[in-house]
Length: 288
Image (tube, rainbow, N blue to C red):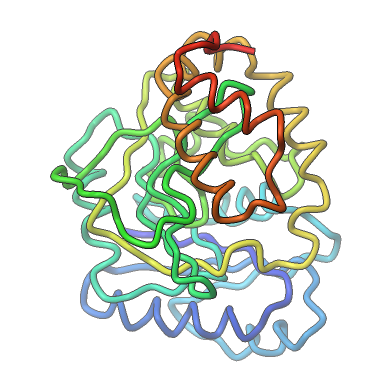
């Protein structure tokens, strides 16, 4: 088995159906694969639908509530592929999304996670070209809210982290890093994994010619634990972020935050807005 696709689902049956249809269509004749789906107690007919699936699908039904980290670790434990693709069920996958990611992973022995470009269907705006860390130690999706892609000449770009909504890694790499930290509840576990891979000497990349759609934050309760997750992440990684990431990321993060403030002014944090201005003006220290 070449590829194992790991997917955790909770309700949103209509998105799961669409994701799997586009997945099957886009991978037909491309690579041998299995899809391991862990259902976290869905109540909207998802379990009945999953019961109809046959090869290449394998389904795990949770008896007790898990979370993104727990469920993906469960899927990884039974996966047989040389490569793991972590994939949200709220994504849509056009033809050609996978090949650039696999090519990037195979060409870079130091690769931890390979991500891709993501756009939000509801707004038509981009959401992810890679992840940078702001001066206040928060991960930011670079390029959020852009209507058009910035010019890029490289097929692959290095970033401090990438989102696990859709990413590719080697099986051995995932387990060497310890998998996901299950103390996170649906947030920051992917950033934590990126930093643990970084500690192993690995780097993260985005395959720029791979672009997908992502109905971001669609799972019920997705953001209920954001504050706790971020507090845990900072408590574990503050020193590493200040030393290794913020100095090179702060200006990119500030630029991205200000752009997002223009797109969503009612959600803007005044302190972060001012800090971003100071960073770009060269009047602020990188670290908080």
